[in-house]
Length: 162
Image 1 (cartoon, helix red, strand yellow):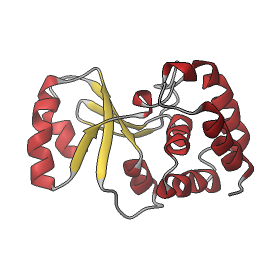
Image 2 (cartoon, helix red, strand yellow):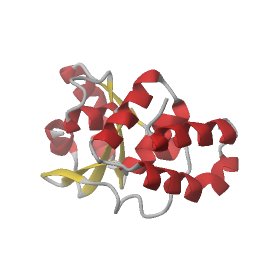
Image 3 (spheres, one colour):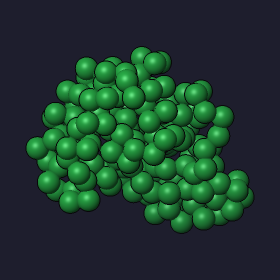
């Protein structure tokens, strides 16, 4: 985060996603990459990412739930603050959107992450299902998704089974 903040040339927010959230919140000790999205985009930071990746030996990808599932408006306000460093405010991307994106992808580690999120009280099963129902009408915009399978995965996670 410090390396990214040093590179930024104006005020912006960086939203961290996935394994980075898991590491920072303490249920994983490492992640294979740092997924993030920034708002607004900062050309200086984008240009600095390759050197940061090389120096820190970490993969950085510009990816978030917005790329894979519908996310309700206001996600920025639902994204918990991690820290403010220099001109950059770092946030965890909306935790419910992260949980849904993980359930949609369905990898073993993703399901474990969602269980951890629920177990730690970061998301609740009932609110997760409600959040899904809010975005369900927009799933047609993501033709790679299988809405019935996605719903089943959310229902199983919300019940705490599977």
